[in-house]
Image 1 (spheres, one colour):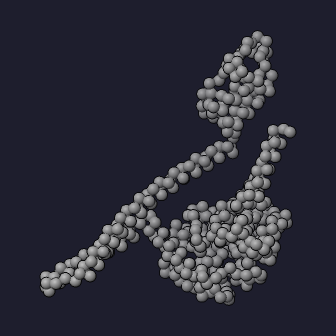
Image 2 (cartoon, helix red, strand yellow):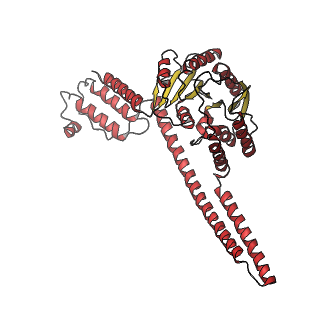
Image 3 (tube, one colour):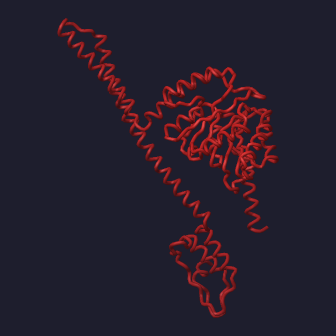
Length: 424
C-alpha cells in the first residue's frame, strides 16, 4: 500500500469516527466544494412528516432563483428528534445534493440548534426558516433573498393572514421590544435572512436568545428591513410553543436590554443606582437633622434605614468598579482572540497558497534522495538550517536535508560525509 493510499484510508476513518461520535455530526458535508451563495438553515425536532416536502420546496426555490449547482445549500439541524426525522433527512441527501444534515444527540433547544447551524453554514446569505412549513420555502426564500439583494443586512418576515393562538403572546413580545429597543418592525420572531458578516458578529447565544437576533443586529448598527410573507397553517406534527415561555421571554428581553445598554459601561448602571441611593440617604439625614433641631427628638427607624441605604449605595459603587475591571479584561481577551484568529487565518492562507515549511522540506528530501548522484561529486556538506525567507524552517529543513544526504549513495571519489556519519 502506498503512502497516498494510507493517508486516504486514515482520513476516511477519521471522518467516519467524527460522524459517528461527534456531538454535532455532519452527514453529506462537502468542504472541498466552493462556498454556496445562499444557505437555508432549518432547525427541527420531531418533524418527520414535513422533512420530504420541505426539501422538495427548497429545491424548487433554488431553481426559481436560477441558482446553479453548488450555489445553494440546505442545512438541516436535527435537534435530538425521536421520531426518525434525522434518518429521513439523511436518506434525502442522496436525492438532493444541496442538502446537508447536522445531528444533536439530544434536544438542546432552538437557540443551540441555530448556533450549530451558524457555525456550519457556508453561504454569503443565510436564511432561517422553520421546519413546520408554516413558512413556505418556495415563496419565502425568494422574498428574503430579494430584500437582502436590495442592500439590507438583515431581513425579517412579517406574517400575513396569521390565525393561531400565539398571536396574543407575539403581540406582547413585539410591543415590549418596540418600547425597549426602539425597533419599528411588526414581527420580530419569524423567519429571517442575514448577510454572513452579521452571523459572524453575533455574540455567543444562550437561553432563548434566538428571539433577539434582530435586537442584537440593530444594536450593532446593521440595516434591517422587513418583507410581508404569507402564513401557512402547519401541515403535520405538533407545535413546540407553550405559554410557559412567556415569563421566560420577558426575563430574557430584560437581560438582553441590560447587556446591550450597559455591558460596555456597567458603572453607568451600578454607579447611577449607588449615586441615587446616596442622595436619598443624604436627603433623609438632612430632614432628620432639621426635625431634631426643631422638635428636639429623633426618628430612629428612619435614621437606620437611611444608614442602610447609604451602605447599599457604596456597595453598588464597588460592584460597578468590579464590573468595569471584568469588562476591561474581557476586551483584552477579545483582542487576544482576534489576534490569534488572524494569525491562524494567515497560516491557513499560506498553506493553501503553497507548501508549508515542513512539507516543503520533506518534499525536497524525497526528491533529493531519489536523485542519482552526479558523477565526481564531492562529499555533501551538512546544512545548518539557517535559511530565511520562503525556504523551509530551520528544524524541518535541516532534518529534510540530513535525510537526503544520508540516503544519497557516495560517489567514487568522495569519502563518508560528516552528516551521514553523525546520523549513523
